[in-house]
Length: 290
Ligand SMILES: [Zn+2]
Image 1 (cartoon, helix red, strand yellow):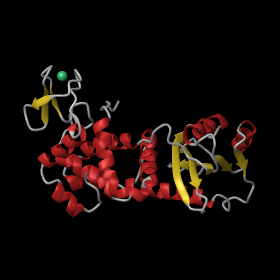
Image 2: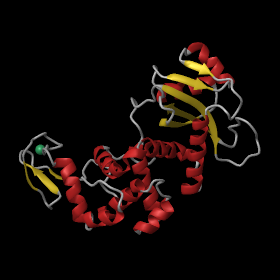
Image 3: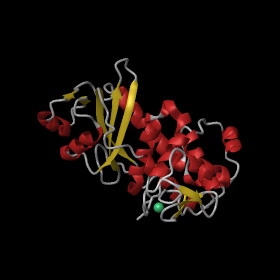
Image 4: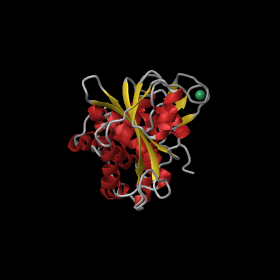
């Protein structure tokens, strides 16, 4: 398993397409081969070194069959380089830089990055626990409209865990339609465990929600003073979006919030992310972009 964020070590380990396919072979059939068609557990050599042929039904499967790596429009080594850059760099990379560094068209880089972002999406059961601060924010747009206007901007739900020692725990971000209480209620249910103790500001949607959700406490402290860590996280997300990606259309904001959440919540295990993403790409059936 490759672990680390060192580019020289990475290039030594993955120098040819064969190095990459061998890595995928270990992930897919390292422990046990099983035919994806008939379930047979015995196989022969397939048409090339990265194919295996089933003994019973003779199905000859490539190591990338039924994985996101299947049918990518570039050599596998370039795909590995992209995963490495997207995971080893603390802030990730824009698709323009990614395309230039790896030597593919920006469109190719963009399409592949979308696949990586898709596997970064967290599990449904992965929810924030303990003390959780909840707020909402507007993203993008340069309208002079003040307050919580979603006419030219996108609404985003934000929640962070505050650990017992006061540090920030995990983070949840979600693109939402509006700041209406129902919308915020579903965002809370999707991202925060029912047993968490939630703190919010005195925005009317939360006041309304606190009547039906007993784990919500409204904080009436002066604006800005309260929920400092949460506001810091919102600023950092906005800086990341602007700094690393320059812009992000409303349509794909969900992908960027997924990516940011993944990076932030795994910030202490960065050296494992390359392998984590490769394994996820091997286990996710590719989906068409539309
Ligand atoms: Zn078979």
